[in-house]
Image: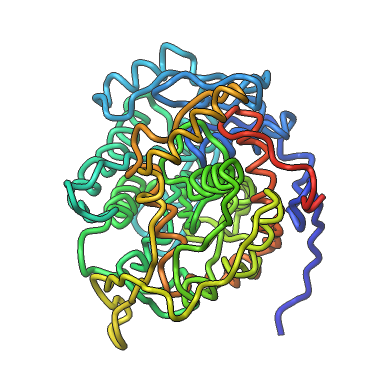
Length: 459
C-alpha cells in the first residue's frame, strides 16, 4: 500500500485545484519560446503571476508583443528572435540581450543506472543553467490547393523540426543548459487527426506511424540533444487550445465567435453545421491558461522529470451541451441537427487504431463556406465600423476557419486520461464553458469581436 500524501491546492479565478509551491522556490529564470502565440502568451502570463518565484522571464518571439497585459510585467523581457534563422544568430541575440545563466558547483544528479555507469558518477562538475525553457514555437504551412488541413505532413516535419533544432543548437552555443526543457506538442501525437483512435488516450500509447508526424520529429530531437546530460524534459500534449490572441490561426474559438456575432447581426439562428454524431461526441478541450499552470507544475515537480503529460480541462464537453449556452450569449435561436437533413459526407483518411471503420464526417455546410458569403462579409464590415474592430478574419478564410470546422464536424471522440498527472499531484480543473466565455470577453477587449450581450452569461 502506497504511503498517503497531502497536497495543498488553490483556486485562481475560474481555475481550481491548482498546485502551490514552497516559498523556497524563488528567483528562477525562464525562457518562453514562441511567446506571442496562443500558448506562449498564456505561459508568460502564468509565470508572471508569481514574480517572487520567477524573477526573470525572457519572452522570445519573431514579432514584438502586444502591450497591456503580462507582457508589461517587470519580470518579463521580450527578445525579437526568429527561430528559423541560423543557430549562431539566435545565440548571438541571447548573449547580447543578456539572457543570464549561472554556474553552480555541485554534484551532478544521477538520473538512472545507465547514467551512473556512463557519466560523471559522484563527480563534481561545472554546470551552466538558465533554469527552465518552455518551447511553443510553431509554424503551420498552408496545405496545397484543394488539400485538407495537415495533409502536408512532410513539410510540417521539416519546418517545425528546424524550429526546435535551431533553438537547441543556439542554447548550446550560448552556453545555456536548462534544468528542464518543456516541449508542447499536442493531440495529433495520438493520430486522432487521421481518424478514430482508441479512447481514452494515454501518454503511453504507441506512436501512430501511418504518415510523418512532426511531434515525433521534435521529441526525438529533444531526447537526443539532452541524452547523457543533467537536463530533464517534459512533453505537454494539449487538445484543442482555447485562448485569445491576435493571430487567429489554429484557434477554434475565434471563428466560432465571428459566426455567432454575424448571425446575431443578421438576425439569423445559430445553426450547427454537423450531424448528431458530431453534436454528441465527447471532445476534450485544453484551455491555454490551465495548460500553462500544468506546464509550470511539471517543470517544478521533481518526480515529473522526463515524462509526457496530457493537458486537458478535465471537464466533460460536447458541442450539443455547449451550443444552447453559446446561442444564449447572443440571444439567438438554435436547434439540434436534423437526422433527415441533406448531408454531405467525407471519410477520414485512416482508421489509426487498426480496427473498425474509418471516421465519417457529415455536414450541411462548413464555416469556410459560410465565411465566403458576401452577405456575411458585408455584415462584418458593418460591425467593424460600428465597434471599431481591429482586424478582419476574411483575408485568409481557409487558414482561419478550417480548424474550427474540423473541431465541430468530426464525428469521433477525443478523450484524455489525466490519471498520470493526478497520481503525481496535479488536480487542475476548469469549467470549459466558463473558460470559453472568458476567452470571448478577451476577444472583445482586443477589439477582435463586438461585445457579448450581458444576459445569459455564466457569471
